[in-house]
Length: 187
Image 1 (tube, rainbow, N blue to C red):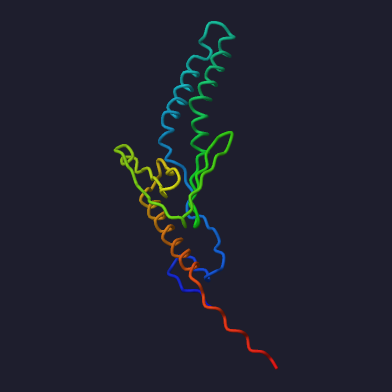
Image 2 (image 1 turned 60 degrees about the vertical axis):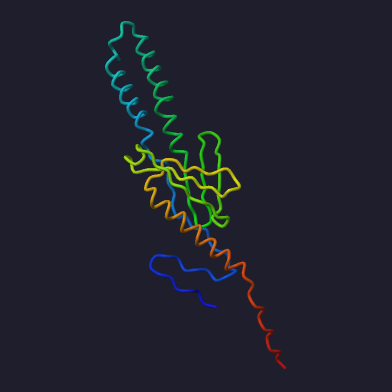
């Protein structure tokens, strides 16, 4: 049996019944706009520390200033950045995965074969930044929210395409194939 031909850029279809490889379609994080306040705090702390360092009356107060600046940067700049960096969405040819957590990693998956609805939500600020929120709901599990997705229209289209292709492949593989005729005996 030969493989069906495909059109430009798409991987070839697999032979019915053969295992399909899982390929990564997209991997992204939420839009970095939520780090705006962290960046402003980092700039303000650097400016204030540079201004007050050496201008304080007692010499040990310079160390107190540096310690306070380090604590503020840790809690208001570094931890929000690490939280943003550790929250990753991955779309493959089989499923959608969400992974988050700084110290303990949590993971959530949603299979394309089961099918789900894709709902797009965009507020006024999200429209201004060119982002949106996708809610994936299969009607059984708790809906998966993909928040602040950049290029939301492209991700929405990719998800709908993957659901459609996976359901077509699942239906095709579920069809029964006629049994092969017995091989002729030699002799």
